[in-house]
Image 1 (cartoon, rainbow, N blue to C red):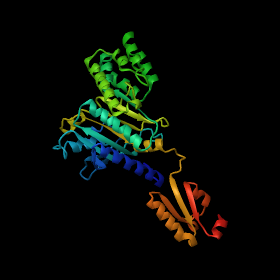
Image 2: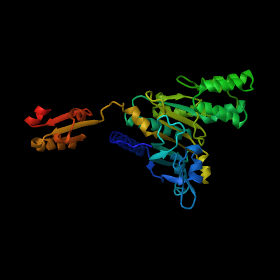
Image 3: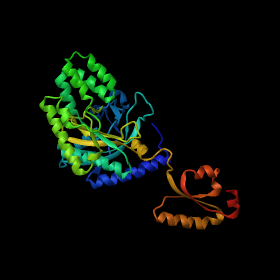
Image 4: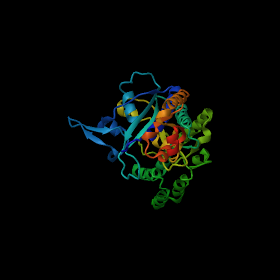
Length: 381
């Protein structure tokens, strides 16, 4: 867990405000949930590995968790406090979530997530809306280059069930896919006691990702109604994304799976070329609400705000814009100039030169510096 220093805090605040304004325009309403939840409700429903949960005990001995995601807490609220609200519901959030990392690798255990949940709509139009809104959040914060990979867990499960049969075999192969360990996947398939035809089907499946993938290629590998229905949903989704004007950013990846086990259908991830980790992910989770005694289909996305900020702002970019440095004799003039710039909407730092130890180091972080100095200070500078 880390401190958020002033520069990053300001960038996140600016981006968050822009995204909040956008999703409100799309009809979503913000809410908050407690940082601490009961383990036997949200903890188990979150689909987060047990070893990644931060657990606590209350005074009565009940097990609590720091919320590991926001989808399960919002599902809990929707099934209780908002149960009588008419469906569909459009909910948005910005909150910190907590997941212990088994292998740190620089990944934080606490990070901010920004996202939305569209609850009570099982149509592909809802999936298209959610993906289109996610892409528009990228645009509104100034992300220039991005791609969204779209898959369908129904297709993956149908193909694997046709060939493998048992849940254990299916989960083993899906783990390789989640880890993007395609070498391990191929080796494991070759070791399975399968016919050469079925082995080829599983190996050809790995080609169903990347630019130019067409759904008819996926259709050739399957025979079940469940798989065909998944492909029909993807085709309808593609049409919906074209209507929203965002299809150029989309590519199909039928090998895409998620570690969040509550996803049931369409899944997707957002990428920026300069980052090795996804900046966002989401999908359809039509079975989650049954854990809270409610039947409702739903879809949504979550954006890893720190990853998004890193993609938008290069590390060496100057974060502050304008600084006015003044001497005591020129203070009045400097303040008048500063106030005028602020009235124009500029972000301005006003600094007495006597309060600076290293002028060169201090001014390095500003893109624009103005001096109001007397003759003695000018000589010193």
